[in-house]
Length: 181
Image (cartoon, rainbow, N blue to C red; front, side, top):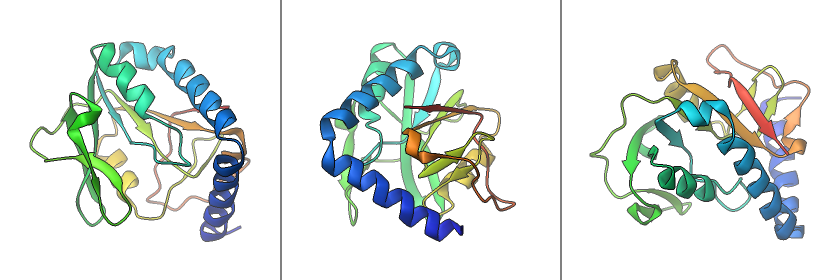
């Protein structure tokens, strides 16, 4: 199956899950976050980069709040230009604003860049057990992961997002660990 077809299929499954059982989705999100905060990579990490989960995605806001409470340095993505994001430090979710056209939450400014990242929480539509990742097709995260190749990487996903095989191109970067529910 082509990447574009896989994207459509997984988006449809994720949307159905979100729309039909928000209570179960919330419970799964909490359980995934609990496994993540008990992971050795999280415990060792001081500087963490995490995407902001929207609607159908895993709610990473809960993770970010917990990490800040645990006195971790947290950065989130800010789109700088086409195919480029920077890791911007935040002190609170209140440091974020909705950015059109999709209402994605981003830091207000891009002044406080996190340079030395220990752990990256990687978004994706689907993953495989070899660390293969199907992103949204923009190339933002592959470029970011390549620049931050020393960081540990963890992806969170629902079981239906964990596939037998993800088609990979030469520029695609694998994640090191996947936590699923």
